[in-house]
Image (cartoon, rainbow, N blue to C red; front, side, top):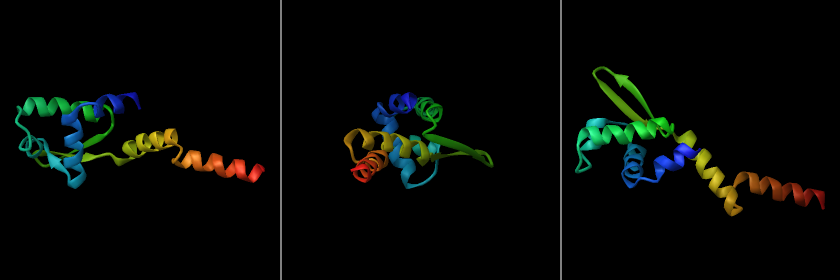
Length: 100
């Protein structure tokens, strides 16, 4: 999960995640949304892949990038637990009520 937080700390990577939430895209399509070089976008995509936040799949001559929602759900679940609104927190609360 540390890699996820490290990757999400960068605003460019968060924007890439927002773009991939809409639909799968190639690196070139992603780069069109930014004022930076394609190698820089590739660097950000590699960081997101390393954190398992993004997956890639070759389709013909293109590589399509997609969002890995499973890892995002894990991160979100952990954060919700901290605030007392997550699934684990609700289970603990329910268990405590049953014990009373």
